[in-house]
Image (cartoon, rainbow, N blue to C red; front, top):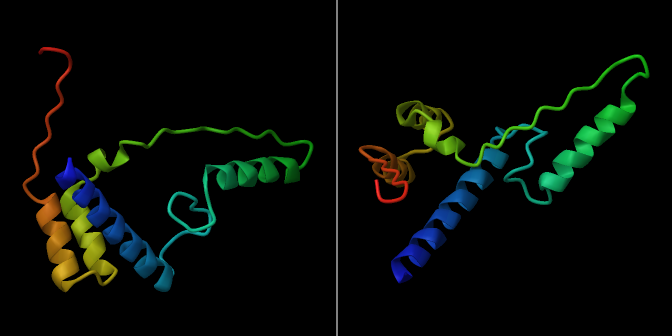
Length: 113
């Protein structure tokens, strides 16, 4: 249990540093809500509702919602590493992320199967 807590703390620190770096180099889209300070799902919903209210009366709006909770599992790790290099993540930080991503195996167990 302690090991999981330490891993979670380390992941949080890495997340905060990476987001901070992305903010400095202005690589985060303006409409991104997931990891920006003072933004949340409520912020995203308010933005969508505002856009719908601002539309002309003769137009129709469509909202498509996607649950991307497990989206990271679908990311090609080599492409992610290339993207990290392109935004100047390097040295120990890059090495740590590469070690975390390369050679990982995934297993899903459903019931007793």
